[in-house]
Figure 1 (cartoon, rainbow, N blue to C red):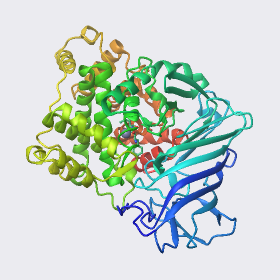
Figure 2 (figure 1 turned 90 degrees about the horizontal axis):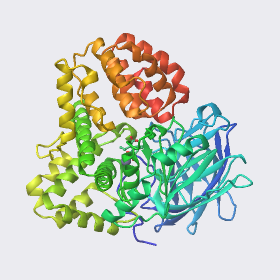
Figure 3 (figure 1 turned 30 degrees about the vertical axis):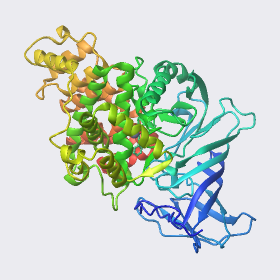
Figure 4 (figure 1 turned 120 degrees about the horizontal axis):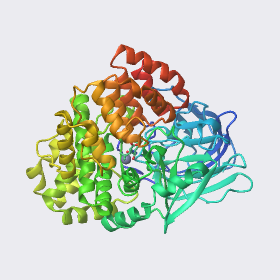
Length: 591
Ligand code: BES
Ligand code: ZN
C-alpha cells in the first residue's frame, strides 16, 4: 500500500506514527486480578502498513511487557524506550513486510494511573471490591499498549475475566446479567479513539430507562440512580431532533463509587458518572446531557489532538445547553449559561493569557493540566455567537451536516475553521473568529446572557446585605442553580454571625446537594465559619471529584492554619482518591 494511511497531524502527546502503521482493531484478553492490582493478559493489534514500514510504535506507560508475538505465535523483536514525563515509553515492535497483526503479552502496574482499585469499604455495597478506568486524556496507555492518540480510531473486542460474583462492563455492547463463570465478552463495532476505552468491574445492577437507555449502579445505589436519571431517554430524543441520529445503539450511564475523579466521562454507549449528581431532585442532570452530547461532538467527530480540545468540549457544552433548553426551557438553559459565564471569567482571571486561547499549545505539558473550564465555556460562547450571527436554523443545518460528513473521523481546529468560512463567508469579518480561536481572554462581542431568575436572586442578596433577615428572603422556590448564584454573590465582608444566620435559615451545612454544599463550603473557609468545618472534612473524605476537591483545598491553602488543616484531612483522604485527583491535590498541598 503506498497511500498515506493517516494524515500527519503530529500529536505531541503520542509516540505513535500512524502515517506509517495504523492500528485498526484491538483484541483484549485480560484477567482482572484484585489481589495483585493488575490487569494481565494480552492485546492483539491488527493494523495496516504503508510501503516500507518496518516498525509499529505503541504508547505504553508503566506496562510490564513480557513478550510480543506474531500471528503464528513466533516471537517478535521489540524495545521499550526511555520513559518521558507524562507520556510514558514508546514500545517499538519489529515487523516483517507481510505482518498484519501482533500480540503484546503484558500486565498493567498496580499504580497504573487510569485504573482505580477500590476496596469493599470504598463502595456503596461494602462487600465486594470495585475497579474502574479513566483513559482520557492520555491514560489508556497505562492499561493497554495502543496508539494513544485521539487522531487514531480502532474497533475492539474484549474478553475480560473477573471474580465470579462480579459484573464487568465496557464502553461497548454489554450483557445485562451476571455471567456464570465470570467471563465477559465485549464487542465495539464502531471505531473509537483509545481515550474512550473503558472498563468497570463491581457488584453492578442494570435498570432500563427507556427504548435505548439504561442505568448501571451498585445495588444500594440503583434505585436513587434510576430516579435521578429518569429523563435520560427524553434527552436522547431531544438530541436526535437537533443533530440527527444517535449512532451508538444503546446509551447507558454507570453511576460509580464516589472516588470517580470527574463529573462524567463520555465512554461510548456507557457514560461514567459521579454519584455526586444524585441530588434527589434531578437538578444536576445537565451533566448527563453533556456526556450524551459527546456522542456527537467528541465521540463521533473527535478532536485530532489535545490542542484541539475545545472542539470536543466547547461544542459539547453548546449542545448540552441546547438539549437542556429543549427539555427544561430557555429560562433554565440561560441559568446554566450564566453560571458558565461566571466560570469563564474566573478561569480567565486565573490563567496566563496564552492558556486562554481556544486553540492551545500544550507542548511539554500533560493535557490533563490544561483541562480547565476555558475550552468549555469560551468554546460555548463562540458557538453561541455564531448561532446568533447566522441564525439558529442555518447553524443547526450546518452542524447536522458536519456531524454526518465527519462521523467517525477526527477534526483539527484549522479544518473546522475552513468549513465554517466556506459555509458562512461573511462570518470572519463580522465576528472575528480568528481572534476567538487564537487570541486571549473573552472577546468584547461575547453574547450577553440574561436571566430574570438570577436578577431576582441578586435582589435578595442586596436585601440581605441591607438588613433583611435571612429567614425573610424570597427564596422559597429556588432551584439548585439559583442557590448557586446566590452563594456566589454573597457580599465579600460577611460576618460569622451572618453566615450562622444564613445557615440557620437554609441549612447549607447539612445540604445533600453537592454543588450547593461546595459553594457554601468555599464561603465557610473564606470567612472562617468553623461550624461547617466538620461537614467540610466529611465532604473531602466521602467523594473524590476533582472539580470539588481542587477549589476547596486551594482555598484552605490560602491561610497557614487552613493549609495545616488541609494536610491533616488529606492524609486521611488521599488513599481513597483516584490518581487524576491526588496528582492535582499533591501539587496544591506540596505533598
Ligand atoms: N470528557 C470530559 C472529562 C475529561 C476531560 C476527562 C479532560 C479527562 C480530561 C467530560 O465530558 C466532562 O467535561 N466532564 C465534566 C462535566 C460537564 C458537565 C462539564 C466534569 O467532569 O466535570
Ligand atoms: Zn465534556
